[in-house]
Image 1 (spheres, rainbow, N blue to C red):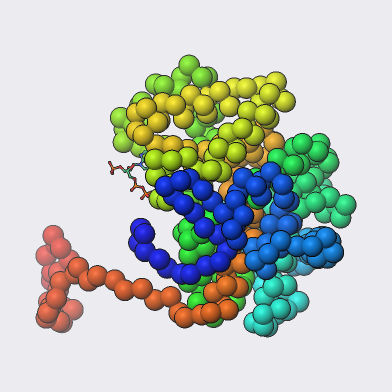
Image 2 (image 1 turned 90 degrees about the horizontal axis):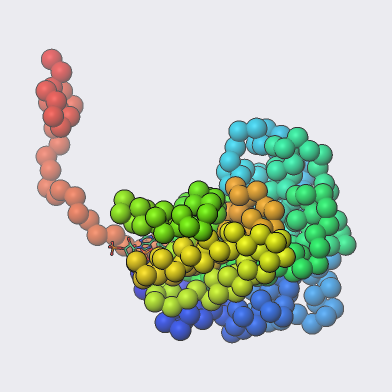
Amino acid sequence: MADVVAAQTAISDIDGKLGKLWYVGYSIDDLAENSTFEEVVFLLQTLRLPTQPELEELTEHMVNDRETADFVSGLMPTLAEQTSPMSMLRTSVSAASAYDPDGWDQSLMANYRKAIRLVSLMPTLIAYYDRHRRDLPIVVPNPKLPHAANFLYMLSGEEPDQRAAEIFDTLFILYADHTMNASTFTARVVASTLSDMHSAITAAIAALKGPLHGGANELSMRMLLEISDVDHAESYVTDLFERKDKIMGFGHRVYRNVDDPRATILRQLSKELGEAAGDMRWYEISERVEKITLEQKGLRPNVDFYAGSVLYYLGLPIDLFTPMFAAARAAGWTAHIREQYADNRIIRPDSEYIGPRDQTYAPIEERSAPGREVAS
Ligand SMILES: CC(C)(COP(=O)(O)OP(=O)(O)OC[C@H]1O[C@@H](n2cnc3c(N)ncnc32)[C@H](O)[C@@H]1OP(=O)(O)O)[C@@H](O)C(=O)NCCC(=O)NCCS
């Protein structure tokens, strides 16, 4: 479906030739530099930036909506035992639907409230799960902290320093939306059947889980760890291409021969975090991998490549990188679902039949599996 227009949207826009991304007409560079994730949530949901009182009201709702139903947090010890983080998120978001105060109300305002609740809740689910699997006491949300900073706090039990909180907030902004990617399309397909918001987000999480979409940020960091030394980068990448394997965090369906603007911002943040940590290793390996991949394959990094080292420097466990991506992208998913509801027609594409035609139905006792005789 490359280049097929699957929906009209006023939420985000990409120019793949110029390497530009806008949310509601605001450039991603401008938003990353000047706004907060809470402002971006308002922007994506209402298609305009908030006034100060509106931002305060939204922030209050988001703080109140961080808490989860007892039933859902009660699932965490079980989910933490055996379930992968993305499977946990998919299952617990689905479970949360039963406890949403708006129930099956599909009105405009109920869906707005559900959207804010889901965006607010996802970091809590991830943090509770992580604390359980590490046998650590739960850290309840801190109402004084902004969304991104509170997520770091619930994971580690310590308030992050201001710059770390700002950088994590920027990452939330960068991941918040990206036009008609696979998970957003999935969410819109589910919404187009007039199924509910939680079902559409559950499906979007399932789509994001795959390594060709959201899973790439984890895999690119694991690759840096495997390389481990900047001098090993060239042979590692060359071997990978000789095996015809894909390099994670590189290539993009929309940005062709041009930098992903989010990668440009994250490259700089990775460098800053490396300098602050006095440990440039992950940044330096990344830079070298980027250079070799461009030389050998003409491929450039996408958002997930430098997001890997940024999240690693910020201390997130690697298998929480994709859940973090989901928590941020929930802002865009929910906005797209509401946009779909507002002007809906079921999404039902066509397919091209390539199978046999005009076959004759044979009774079961006369059939044989390919390569086998009929059982006598
Ligand atoms: C993102 C991605 C799925 C886009 O897929 P796509 O638009 O279908 O790209 P294509 O498969 O058409 O790629 C064109 C060519 O580049 C190659 N290519 C694309 N991404 C590559 C990568 N990361 N590593 C190696 N080769 C790659 C393809 O194999 C193909 O080569 P071919 O023409 O010899 O078969 C793909 O680039 C990819 O798998 N990247 C790695 C996963 C990733 O980082 N995902 C996060 C996306 S934000």
